[in-house]
Length: 388
Image (cartoon, rainbow, N blue to C red; front, side, top):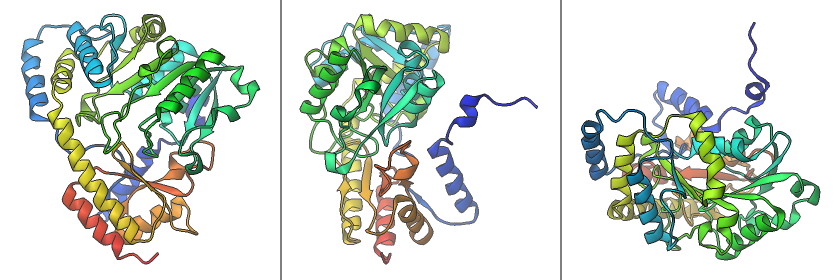
């Protein structure tokens, strides 16, 4: 018998794959499930983006393999958007590289900067590829709990000196999945200073930067000194409902970006040029992003009102398209998710499925605001009929 590697056998099942199987099983049994589980937008990709992609298929008919770094036009579009959005200028040829979405890029980053045995500092709960990418490089994962009492910021001062001394990389993710928290400038300043003082790389996952309601998020590259220690990951998936297109980008100084770009030459053959052209169209249009934010706000407000009608407290919804809600007193995340699924036929993600090592998420569930406005309203009515 040919055995799988230790990396595979020790890997936890990917939480969203497990959720998909549970939902599919219920639907095969004829249960009408309203799915707030996986964060996959159901709003269509804007027509202007689809049109640009269709046109590019013919125009790029003989383009061959794409550049590993992305086309000059795509990188220039990213730099224009980044400066218009954040007031941060980038050299499109040296400080921007295209990626095949964010997930693949996040998983690969440790190959560029982490040696076997090095520690990687990871927020918990958090995006699973922070962990799987570190483990694939044989790094040691040190988890930083994101607790409600700390406003969902990690306590950098509590990291033991012996851990810091063998660390190479700190992940942060704001607006945060799953807690929805938007980073303050004070926290971003703290993270930059922490990495500068300790010789760490700061990897900032900003994939949800355009999904906000009241407070407009910034970028860590807007903090003085960040360019010397930071990379920023972003994606078109959530901003423009382009999850299936698999297109994103990483920005950093030339010196920091170079090792990552070198890894990319070994890991894939570049993002398709016609997809990059679609992304250029998306980055050139803010109107559809404003419309999406409006839709998510309407769904968020309806869901929050229903949860409050149930008597729930600890409902968080600052940014992203998630709602992070504390379970009723006496229930944990698994129990509350099971209750919602079995009695209201509303699917959510229990916080425990998103946490790797700590208990920071044990009492929370995550709702992804991806069902339609009408279906969200129906889910709210189902939940109001629950007896907690």
